[in-house]
Picture (cartoon, helix red, strand yellow):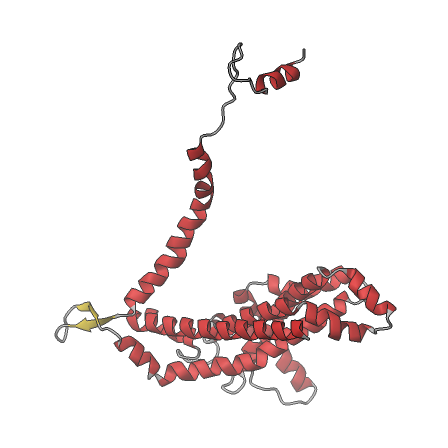
Length: 326
């Protein structure tokens, strides 16, 4: 009898009352088996609590406090001010001007970003395009550049003194716009965001298109549908969830607009400390030392973002139900 046969014999059950030695196979206790999932989830849970929940709770608690001084040169003390910070935010014109500015920015950039990414994904996925891998890599490369590096790169292109764009326009005899002026700096930042995020969303849409069974497209081609008709009537409806997610992420990123104005404020006087709500909260906290007021601004912005995200998701679910009912 081989060693493996002996092991099988040892694992055979023994009838009650039968003689012979019993070989008991050790098994993990129920306690260890039930604790295993919690042990595996514990690292994520600890990081989630200390890096996500604790900062939120701390910000909410801090939003109810304010700094007051006792006497002319007295030491600053943190006191409970209740809802005074929130009332100040709701009546702060600088906060709402910055919020309207990011809404204007998003109303222009989000449709362009989603639309161009969708068109590029459809073109790369079409049957007539060759070298798909090269196109995907070329479109995705801008996203591989960090936002800070991309903004610094574009800021050098926007500089009026040594910008190649300005030099080229002057050489052609055309007037060169002030890319960092009050009326154009917002759209200069929009150009940076579009340059970065169009390729990223294109990859998302292309991945969703590749997940669709190719038999659906083949059946449509056999029925005589053109590539344009397949794209409009089949491909876009099938990847609507991916489009919704991309739109939602773009909207959240727009409301949290921070990196580009923070970096370009060094070279553009048109960007003030309250240019966007996120940038305003940052300057209020770390330049004005008003941490309670800055926390209140952040929470108000987070609540607005949550409400708008909920509206987008509800609208998307309603459209999906309407499409299923047709």
